Length: 152
Image (cartoon, rainbow, N blue to C red; front, top):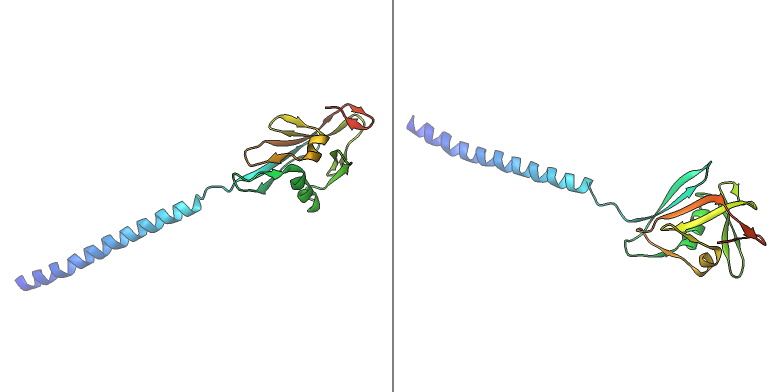
């Protein structure tokens, strides 16, 4: 009888150790799954289009420190027709003429804002660098025009 108690003790120790090791591995596995499901969001450049009939935000993947030309980003979106856009270009200016069928008129047009600052068509042509930390809005609003060009 004494011998059977010794044998039982010998078998219970490895069983307890196996159970503890199994619980430890399950806990580690759950921690890894939780971490991988909460990956940090990749930085994106967001461009918001606003009018009374149309509102949409487009996200473009970017690295945190990468700055891209806004006109190039808009041209890429236009190429994919997401949203559909038309531009008017001269030697000195670049202007958005239409977004998703909403066209500029003599008294209203698409106006670009970066971080609350209005960007005119000359600045657009020269190039405006934007990154994930910039707030970009393209709004359809009332504009004054002289010889067809909007007045800043």
